[in-house]
Image: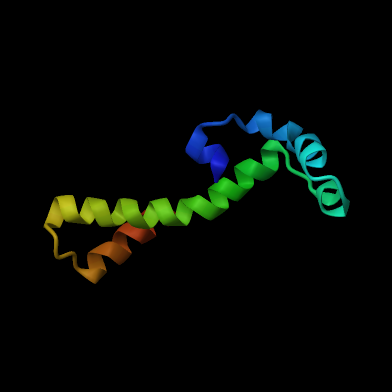
Length: 82
């Protein structure tokens, strides 16, 4: 989450295992692994559903006022998934 919030580059995450090993010596940090592809996957899988839901709610509010119909929300979600 810090990568997304602070605007770190994904490639900066390739050096995190070494940094964590220096900060927290021991078995846990030795087993820690992180790479730009892992971060990219975690963010897209973890954050996309949140953003998709909030985006749909915001679109519905703009288009139909502040009392969205459930059918409209579901249709927008289905179209985004397609």
